Image (cartoon, rainbow, N blue to C red; front, top):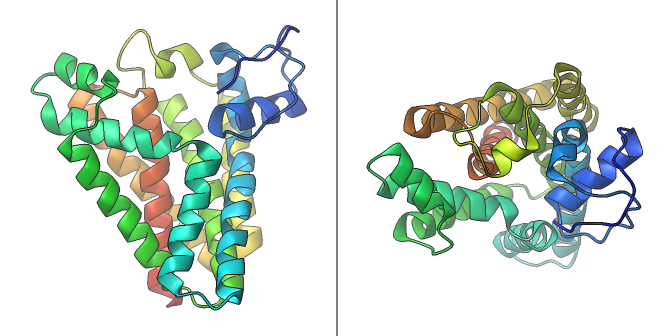
Length: 260
């Protein structure tokens, strides 16, 4: 996330999209407005659209690797590596912090303290290995590059749409931090995010496959949200990142079960 120059923030689709790109990726963006966490709440309606970029580039890497006749598992890891580079491992870091906090803390305060600690513990390492390994295994089951590309893009879109709804439905677990400073999006913002979350996968994958993927993403998001509510009583930035990871993983698993 890069702070950018000088104009006051004024809500608009272009501004919101650019702020979302800055917030969710490491891509260089020529912003002419001042980035602030307060702007992220409104900008979150564009989170699914950022998924088009991340998923599109990741899917293109997978597609190209298949055309080079590389092993499918290697194609999958290359696609995942592209996502990590594009996002700066933003969501992977989040799910690792959540695993350490929820697994290693006995109280809510201790869990939140561990989640803020930059050190990586055993729970984080094991969780990341399992999540990334499962994603790679699922992606390697798609031997048709066109299908793989469509699934990767759609999962990236749907999972980032879940981020917005996590911000809307879950109260911040603490008074400071990303979850609190971004604020709760307006209902219309959440509905716009939902519109893109549903529309784009349906267009890319078709009504049947798109619906299955979206429902699976919702299940994944609800599952980790429920765990967070039980563990710390709400959301933090790390919880939101974990929502994205679980939603994406469940989307991929569901589509693999249906297609392969």
